[in-house]
Length: 208
Image (cartoon, rainbow, N blue to C red; front, top):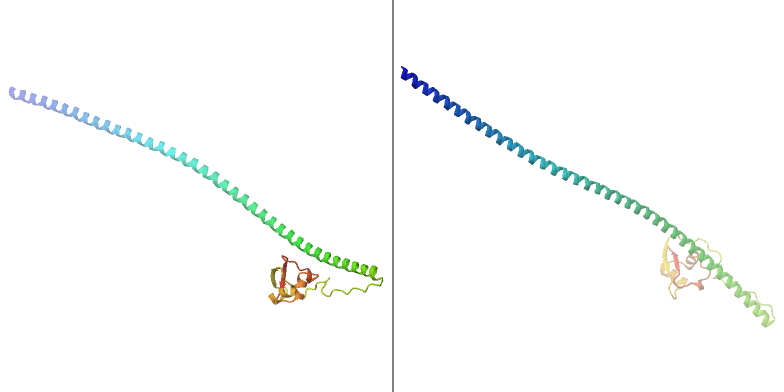
């Protein structure tokens, strides 16, 4: 019986040693796993921090680009506004120039007619004085030129075509070309004498 107790005692010691060894091994395994997990978490945190920093850099770059785009859009809007203002000003200038040119053309036409009438009258007066001084006889009264006009009634159609007088043109040939009449052409353009029709003059030829 004493031998049996000794054997049991040895087995108990061996089991206790085995349990202690297994406990230490299990603790080492758990400690090793925990350290590994901590190391993995640290690495994950490092990677996440780098990603956050990269995102911050990209965000800051995007903010700068957005600011530049806003400045460019504002500059383009200002340029467009200035261009529209300039276009409006140019349109006003063109309108004013057109009106001024029309007024000058009308004034020049009236001055031409007045000068023609005055020159014809002076020629008539001069001829009469020459006849008086040479023949000693009273000069005959000059017959009025039937083609010379001082009034221009608006007896012509409002519709018609523009025409530039060419060399060799006459009121008759121009009127015939457009199916108009000499009277219409002469009144529409206030031509005092058909004999003073000049090449290069712009006429309005009324016709139906």
